[in-house]
Amino acid sequence: MKNTDYRKKTLEVLPHKKGAEHPQWKGEKIKYVALHIWLRNNFKKSGVCEFCKEGGKKTAWANKTGEYKRDITDFIELCYKCHWHYDRENNFKHRYENETKNITTRKDS
Ligand SMILES: [Zn+2]
Image 1 (cartoon, rainbow, N blue to C red):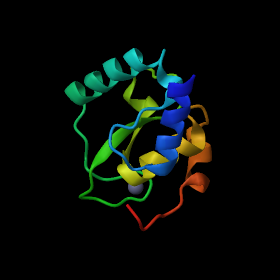
Image 2 (cartoon, protein in one colour):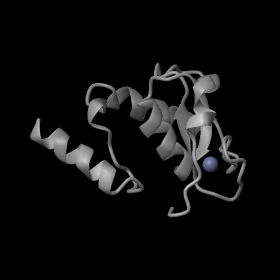
Image 3 (tube, rainbow, N blue to C red):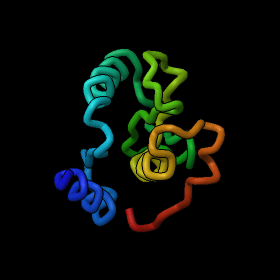
Image 4 (cartoon, helix red, strand yellow):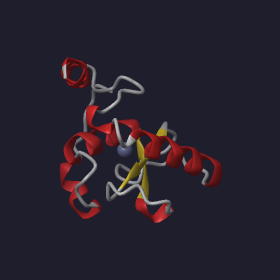
């Protein structure tokens, strides 16, 4: 789909763009949105990234397994920078245990 290609390209060019959507989400999106509403309503974010351990940043919930379980243990709180790497490197499917080696520090965020 052309639209998908465009989005992919946009993600590569503007990786930090807020609200950038992943093309493969089409079917997953509803589930994703519902879960994030659930997360927001039930769990308070600490503001500390669980990967880089930096606090005082904007953070977002990231799913560990790609299964989007309605279970807080299936999520980790990441700053936007780590979250971006997480999504990109893992495409929502890899396991949490494989994460840390994929996270690199970027200075351009
Ligand atoms: Zn981080």
